[in-house]
Length: 276
Image (cartoon, rainbow, N blue to C red; front, side, top):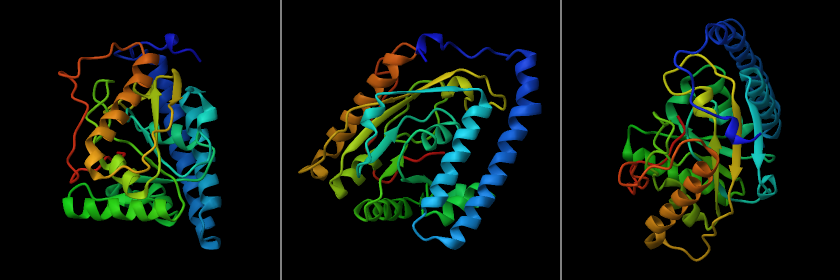
């Protein structure tokens, strides 16, 4: 779906969109999450490698994207080859996670905020399927969580992470943190940049109603890290920033802001990038 069909989200939304969202889409999303979360919990009793749980999560994600009314297109899907890597994506919406789970054609683990583990159904799946929690309230725990993520990579499992500290508040990219680069260098695996376009207009932060729009997932060229050290951390984070920004602003209607206004680089290891 061409991104030129994407435009600013109406404010307020038309009454019929709000009615459909509250009466049909939201109950369907809640119901699907309960059903698939329960199935994932049941599957965890009979398996240890998480394959069936991941397949259940993929089905859940595709149902949520379909129910939301979004029309998802993947650009350069040939770059989504099953390789050991840190897959990184900008963070615009709660719908980012379903969009990624429904699009990536291989098993992976996601690095997520530790407080998501407290949620019913979603938290059960995260805990039982081996996802990687990060404690955003405790810097020491955050470093330990990054080390746990590196062990996951070295065990042969790809990771997915959002290299921003949270969801966008205006549709633009936020500051990029260096957790993904840290993990990729430590494990000596590539960074794969990805950009989601349209999920902010679909369901922005602090919104309760869905606005069906075309959503695009653009896949960039993998960034190798072989031979890099922690001295290259900032440069690698900047390269990742530039790659995702290029993907995003090439396919959105939003103009690319000056970096002086939207600073896109943060290098505090005590604040790893987290999906929220």
